[in-house]
Length: 194
Image 1: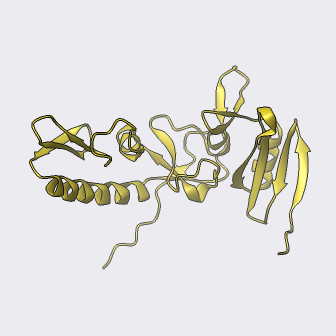
Image 2 (image 1 turned 60 degrees about the vertical axis):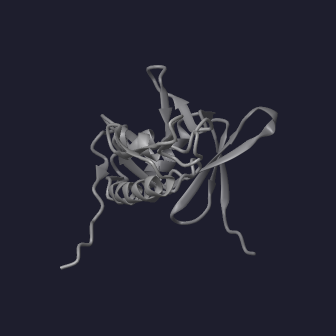
Image 3 (image 1 turned 90 degrees about the horizontal axis):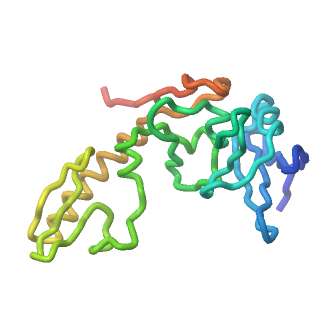
């Protein structure tokens, strides 16, 4: 296997150039645990990332800004959204390239969370009650439906999840060149059948 990449050391972190389009920050934690966070390789992004010393906070690449507040890598590169969240739709927190990020609302973020450990059915969005019925989260803002059979509950939940996945995939994506501003997000082009 032929690997062509270069390594640059800035502010205690290494920036690894992986390809013409992609670079990574190597963050070393306690006990020599290493994390590699991918980002889009542009000259502007490289110079921005090189200015800070990076660490891992809540499993995300983070630094401290001039005001002493946390500054996450996607916020630095693409701007912090005024409302909502930056979501890794590939579900890989190490991948901070614009293609893997989406701007989503709080409601969509709550939908996108993983199944909780104390879930009574093991299925995200479906809860079992003592009377044998099932409560299914089928809408944003905590809209629920009740079912007696688990099969009906699963069917309703799957329909809702398909609708939400489409909403998430059509959410705005970050754009390079809007560093530090809240307007660095655009809506993806939606191909509608004629």
